[in-house]
Structure formats: C-alpha cells, structure tokens
Image 1 (cartoon, rainbow, N blue to C red):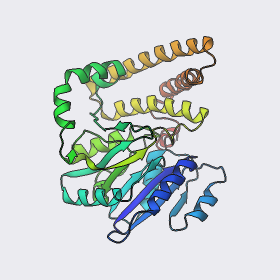
Image 2 (cartoon, one colour; image 1 turned 120 degrees about the vertical axis):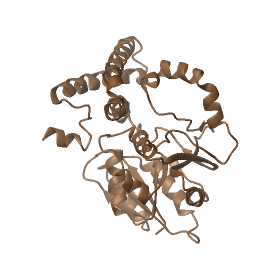
Image 3 (cartoon, rainbow, N blue to C red; image 1 turned 180 degrees about the vertical axis):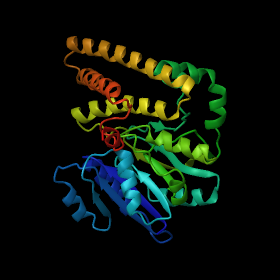
Amino acid sequence: MDVSIIIVNYRSWKPLHNCLESLLSIDKTNMNFEVIIVDNFSNDREFDSFQNKFKDFIFIRNNTNSGFANGCNLGAKEAKGEYFLFLNPDTVISPNTLNTLYKTYKKHSEIGILSCLQVDKKNHFFYQTNIFPSLARLFAISRFFFRKIIKKRTDTIFDSKKELFYPDWVTGAVIFISRDWFKKVNGWNEDYWLYFEDVEICRKIAQRNGKMAVTRNTTILHEHGGSSRNDFETEHISKTEVIISKHVYINNNFKPSTKALAHVFLILFILLEKTFLSLLSLFLFFNLKLRTNRYILKNLCSYYFNAIKKQTWLSKRSVNYQKVDL
C-alpha cells in the first residue's frame, strides 16, 4: 500500500460525504491507496449508513470523542500505507492532488511534512504563511505588529514563484507525511484535544531537521470551521479549546523564561476580552455569535479553576488528562 488517507470525523457527515465522493474520483492506476475514516463517537445513527454507502473504505468507530490527535493516531495504527495523508472531512480533493503530493514528497528528501494551497467556496485562499508561536505572536494585536516588522522576510519566504515554499508549520487539514517521520515524532501529541496539535507535530519535525513544505501545484477546497463549528454547542466548545490548546502549547514548547509570563498574559487578555464581550451580548442579545462569549467565559473559568486544582494545563477532554486524573 502506497498511501493511507486518514480522516477524523465528528458529526460532519454532510461535508464528509462530499470529501469521500471526491476521493472516489482518484485514479488508482499508478498508486495504491486506502481511505480510513475514524468517527469520534458522533452517536447520531449516520455511521452505519456511510459504512454501507462507501463499502471500499475502512470505517472505525471510536468509543468516545477523544479529539483530533487521538483519532489520527487511531487511524494510523490501522493504516498499511508507506505514507499517510491526514485530511479534514470538510475538504474536497481534486483527482490529481494525491498523486502530486505523493510524487513531490518522494522527490524532495528534505521534507518532513507536505501540504498544499487551500481555497474556500468564496475563492478565498489560505496561503499557510505560518510562523511558530512565540510570546510576541501570541495575541492578534501583537501578531499584527510583528508581521509588519518582519514583512520583508516573510515576503521573501512566501511570495516566491517557486513550486514549493517552506513555512514553520502547516495546518492539520492537509498533512502528507511518511510513516518513518510519523514514527520518529511518535505521532500526534494527545495532550491536545483540538487545535495546535498540527503546530506541535511540525515543531517536532523541525527540531529533527525536517522541513514543512507547501506545494503550489495543487489546491484543495476547504471550508474552514466546517467540521468543528457545525452547531452552537460545538462552536463554543471549539472556541474554548483553541484557548486551552494555546496554554498546552505554551507549556510544552516555550522556554522557562517566557512560559509563566505567556500564561499570565493569555489569562488576563482572554478573561478581559470575554468578560467585555459577554456584557455586550446582554444588550445585543440577538447576535448569536456574540452570545457564544458567555459560554466561552463560563468554560474558561471552569478550566482555570481545574488547572489550579489538578496542576495541569490539559483539557479535560484530552486523552492524556485521564492519566493526570488517576
């Protein structure tokens, strides 16, 4: 088996259907591949229907919603391919994309992870011009000024007309990696329930002198947020987990000299922001997106209380949190 395509799903059946249909159009003449779908306990009666419809694909039913990293690792354990393509369920792949990723990866020995350009339904490109997080890039305002300061350097890196460019990290929506590299970094870090696990796996590869690359020779359709924000409850949980995963990333990767400061700044900034937006939502009660901030604030207060009590930054939903809780 050349490539194993691994997709983690949670109640994203409509976009997943489009994704799987696009995979059926790939020519298997020059490459053997399998498709593995790990369902993170959607528990909504759709699993059997999809399993019956896409009989050539492998479906794995997870017994809990254990997060993206755990789902990916579960799929990788069952995979037979020499290479893995981790793909979001809210993506649609063109017939030539898999072959382009496969050939490009094999051609460039310096690559640890390969991705491609992404575009949404409104034809907006996500260019993956990503730099590893630091204290100066932790917040939206500081990121804005930092990008202005280093604009010349990023323009040089990302505006080249060459086939490949090399960001610090690439989004987990499309990650092509060899089995060897996957083993070297021990797979996805299950400290994370959702978000930032893609940043960390890229960082581990960079620390071992591998490069992250994006090819301009193929593009996928990606509805950002389509798999993580498909209802009100999922949205406010997902947005909470973005913040929690920032804390986990800081704890795992920041230097001791900046780690405590980064945690404190993040807590103060987020609580002030969410408190203000929650109060504002009382007046603009008709604004559903604004109202989610009340739930996020409640979730975060519970999280920070638990972080002090358990002495861990991990989310309660994280697989590795269970080890802390024993």
